[in-house]
Image 1: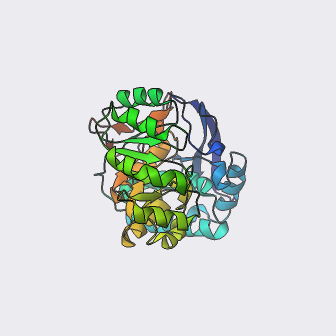
Image 2 (image 1 turned 60 degrees about the vertical axis):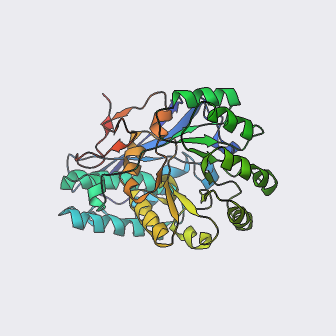
Image 3 (image 1 turned 90 degrees about the vertical axis):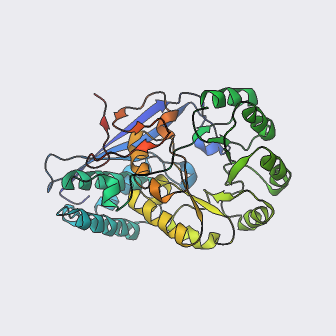
Length: 357
């Protein structure tokens, strides 16, 4: 680590409100999530602390053990003087340059980069007096979030859907033996748009006969039905489907976008995959340039990660930023969800969130 930085890390293990399982076994048993919170200080900005969060997913090659090692390496590539906080515009350019230095230092490791990138944006925002979305030159007007329901028995998922009825859309995790029965049960209690996410759990033989049923049930989009690099399967399904297919595990970082042009209609950008606030903003902007429909997603993060994601949400058509709502206890405060299910982006400097006392 470069002298002049002080990094403190804390692992949080927080139970879910309801069991939360997805089709990928590597995601865990569904009872508790684990995430890493960082506090970053600079000798050049005394008294200020940047909060960050990185949610490691073993599917992408990261764990709670790898993240501290990688973060030390990343901070060794930049110094406190690289974070120009003389003005909002200068800070924005400096943050982008630091992100480029991180990418030169090591490939991948999105969660580790994400934790530091969020903390740096929070620090720069506090130093300049600007909220993170303003550092990025983005609007505070963002789409509403949907609400996600994990894999479970159809009747259980339907009851959770009934309780979440105020949300303008629901995202239903699929990839199990009762997918159609689950959707039928949800539709019986919920009249709004349904988004489905198979988390790589389908094959073409499973997906093809489901498409007419999904159309009948009013499904708005299908997220990552197949394994990550099965572009051939994705292309065949999108060609046959009137419902947009959205790449998630196939769209980890900005360099993945070109290969997906003409393959799927949409991409799901997540800060913990691509490396943080700045990389997500650039990936969303590039996706729009390439003609993709844009979906901004999240992991099961606290308000730290969700506030950072909300800062770039004006670049997305669809928003799935419900991670902190899935938790039994969120140890941070300051991020507020409006009655319209839109996260409120305040004028508070940085992320606008802090640990609850």
